Length: 77
Image (tube, rainbow, N blue to C red; front, side):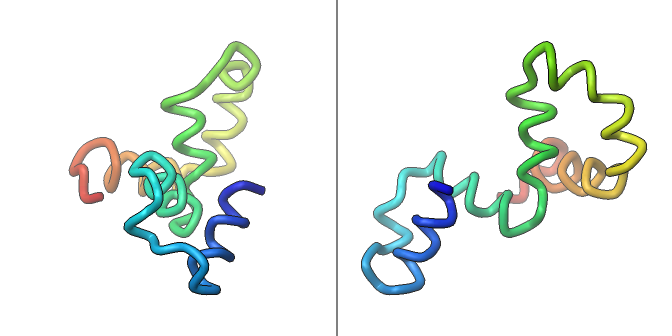
């Protein structure tokens, strides 16, 4: 919800993207790239998320590979 609101404010000219905290900018990029879930899995996983890892990997291999390639290995932010 927060990311949607920030995006709406940027699109509407109420907020400049340069005024948004870097961590929020990263989340916005991840969301735009369709990689927010992959980020949560690797960077913010708790016990419940970790239990779902194997099933998620099978269903989302392409997204996980893109996340690792773009954000973890090559750091192309």
